[in-house]
Image (cartoon, rainbow, N blue to C red; front, side, top):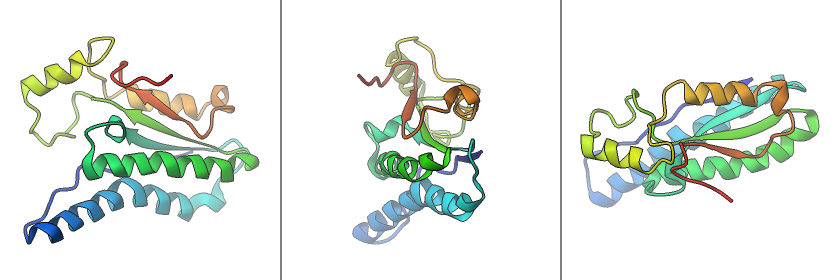
Length: 164
């Protein structure tokens, strides 16, 4: 099993606005997309039938995402092509798209109580995600019960973003 879990919010460096913006976007793509692509490519020959590749995405791919969301959206698109490549060899590839998870340092100390309350209010179950919600989903995707699930993005967000 391979879990691509690197990523985060890229900070804009100081400098001329256009150069700073370009650097922020390049850092966001490197952290949230290229890290998964290159890691997977480096171990792909070691994956065997029954293996699973799971990449950690984000609800930011669906809204309010900026460079971070764009990179996570690209992760989903890449996953679809990766699945088409790996599935004939018995290897699944999926994305777990996390919503707001309390108890992490994702917001780097800048999450206000008001923003926390708004993120929880968006969910159907009226609670934030827990740090255990994501790895439990990853473990399921690596289990025998998920062998026919591939090329998918599973949204783990309490209903804050739904698909039809």
